[in-house]
Amino acid sequence: MITSTVEQSWDRIESWLARHAPVTHGLLRPPALPTDIEAAELRLGVAFPPDLRESLLRHDGVELRDGTLRLDYYGPPSGVGEIVSSTEFLRGIGQDAAEEESELDEEERDEYAYWPRERLLITLGIGRQSSDGLFLVTRPGPHHVRVGRYFDETGSTFTPWTGLRHVLSDLATALENGLPFDGRMPLAYEGRLIWDDNRTVATDPTSALDLAAATPEPQVPPAAEPAPVVPQSEGAYAVVSFGFGGLVGPEPEPIVQPDVVFVADIDPGELLDRLGSVPATAGPRTREQARLSAGAPWAAHRPMARAGTCGNGWSYATQEGGDAQFDRPEVLRRLSSGTRVVRLVKEGPEVRVTVMEDGIERPQASRRVESPREDYVTGPDGQHWERIGVDPWPGSTAAYTRLLAELTADHGIDWDPAHDAAAPLSSALLLPLLEEVPQARHPVTVVRDIDLGALVERTPPERLRSAVAAQLARLTSETGIDSYPEIARALQQARRDEPVDLTTDGPLDLRLRTVRAQTRAVRGLLDAARHHQEPAPVTPADLTAWHARDTAAGALRRFLLLPLPAAAETILSLRTSLHWRDELAADLADQQP
Image (cartoon, rainbow, N blue to C red; front, top):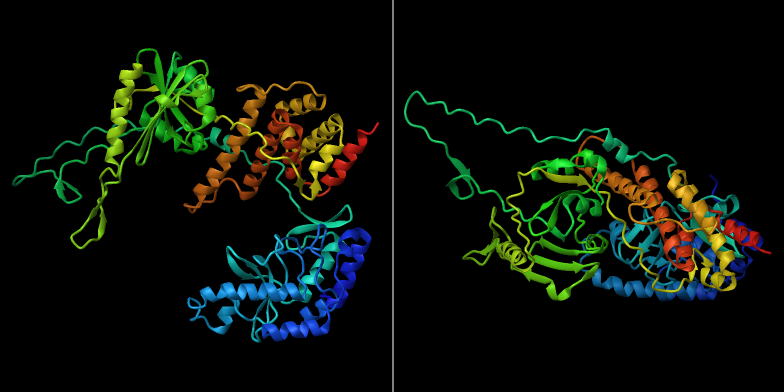
């Protein structure tokens, strides 16, 4: 590719802006004065590279107002004054790191030092401040005039651009041909240059739940018969075990104190249903079997729960694998609907008892106990040593047992975690409940360069609702979830302004929860593959596609449950087509009388 000169690139950039983004074109500043550049060089003690000097003599940066020219996330081009102030500011900060960087040679300083004296910050970052942006290397050497990106939280890295002329040439080419510039697309909207993502998602991502369904559930092998003792031909013999600290007997089984919920006046089957049990996975399992199954590909990273009875009308459930469910407010509210729930959880030093009745917590009945850590000891020399094989939180272990005894006295709950381990109890994988949709906490303002607040104010509600429903339909089509009949039916009802059934465990709710479970399962497969040599049966593209489906499903819920402006904010922020703004304008125009 031929790289234009700085002058040629500015000719091309100005021509495109004049035709497509006149507001942005009008915010280009006049040329800098040569005397101002010379004064800046003298003040900073560096010579401006020829490309930078030539660019400043064309435009002394831009006016920092709405619609100004930005190099996307790198921010607007700086004028002479901004280059001086930014560079001096960063030099002052860089003095704090000078001692640590004293061993770097000159070439290493160009690349790794926080802010070498020879650098110039030539753009103001996304916040129009000196906290990030593009920089130039002015020191003679192998990195002379190279372009890098500075960010105050991560430091500096070099970009592929070997000079400012390459940056401007690539920008001109992207504008003229509708191509990405550093991964993002430049667009003209209402006379301004804006930037947007060129998003694409796989249309038919691999289903992790289908992979799991084709995998058999593992079974705990039957206990092996103990090997007979063979007498030795000569002398005595003994069997010994070696443990920490010398010859010891068999190590005791660790105390199992799982998170548990107790629910009054419902049976174990209904308790599992309220948790979201998957009927096809239901069956009796011991704790060992449940944990083995929950950790296998068959489970697809879905939680596993077991449920039983514990006297006086109470049922209980323990979770044996998967993402924690008993600390989720929506789960506890559903479990306690029309009844009482007592939750006992232990996490490190803390043990908590929570009591809820019909979705409302009873703080006066809740308790919390903390204990200090006790698996570290201090030696004679003052050093701290960790004791291996001991309970790090013996206080919380004892508190769990004590609180469980109090539950027996207070509520008639009779349960011993050690007694249900070997008993085959009702169990199932769970299709986790969706989180409750939070209410909007702030009025909508700007969404991807559209003043949504102003749009809401000037558009009649019915016209706006119809246009947003059309945007939602396009979003579901882009992500592929409109192929599910439950979602397609809901979209049709929504566009006709008919009520949509979103009750828990209804067809639409189950579909949305299944999409969420697919996303979690794909992420789990990819995470697990990082620790194995075998490749995962799914790809990052699959995860991107399922995540897009999940967020689109969430946008549908927000459309059905929230005020229209808040739902519109989510829907418009998720659209993948670069032409969604034009489509929105057409949707609004279609509703004109």
